[in-house]
Length: 232
Image (cartoon, rainbow, N blue to C red):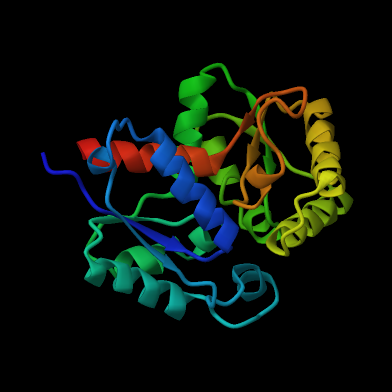
């Protein structure tokens, strides 16, 4: 079976796109350049804010998300991945506008979580306000019998500030301390596993940083992309 060409619908934000690209490369078993996957990236940082569109009546992100997906399809991508959790709130219109498959970051993450932690009962989700409000991860985990705990309103404000700091290029100790404080609060509240369900958050919170395991959806998407490209 011929390898599939990966298309990355990126730019949301650029560092998250770089992170996914690097994780796909690292996850690919290859001893030479030629054994790596072909990857086409459209780093379209001009896509309007997904959170503003969902929560504040801002400019609709759909048209540019769709046009970027179609651009990748025309460029030769066989399937798409999108390193932005909040943008998956627009997954359906994107998927319907293209003739190639598109992997879903939340579906891949929930599947990976239950493969790694089959006795999981309670998970903590750290994400943008839009991802939390529209229950992108909640619905999928709850459908599999897993309870989801989320930050309080004050803690969610702290997470939002972390996301914006990372988008602005600040991944320093103070930013890391803010996200760790909220993460530990969820662990204290019963979370057996934390999911960093905004692609900026794995850049400042990794497994081993807090008292419970941390699962990175970007890594889950990278692993899924390699599997899909190599095996179908």
